[in-house]
Length: 194
Image 1: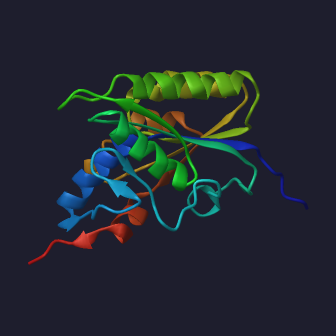
Image 2: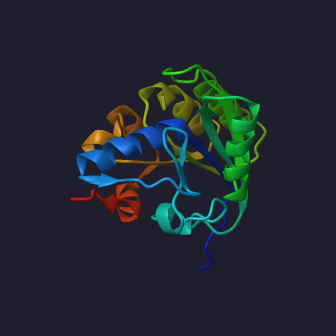
Image 3: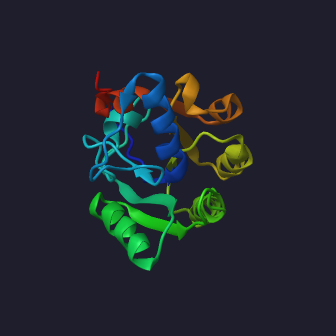
């Protein structure tokens, strides 16, 4: 039988992803090295995972072919406009549609979660995707997941199942499918120097 093809979009709470990844690396006696895929507390991605083709990590029960509509990466950065532009260009270079906010020192940006929610809901109501891939761990996203499912959409959650990852069980249970990306993270971490 022919496999069904799904239109999909990806929504990444990148600030949270980067911060949790740093905590996991530390707990495992490893370190993330700043490079084109990682800027501490700002963004993280995996070199082997293009933003527009997610068949390896998310292709568990669903077959997701290259029908990517868009992959949004939400984050925040401290600094001036050139710093914000640097982050936007880095994320764009990885294949994402960047949504970058400026934040005050030592605070979490308030706009990241709100904009991700607006975009995920708007695209669901406009029928722009069949499947959404959400990279997040906060329980605040549970009502969002349930509303998108009421619209007939499938929600695949990808995040760290590691104890330091901060994944809330309520969010994992609300999703249609969950994929642990801890192995991909640990593959990218370097051992701490001895």
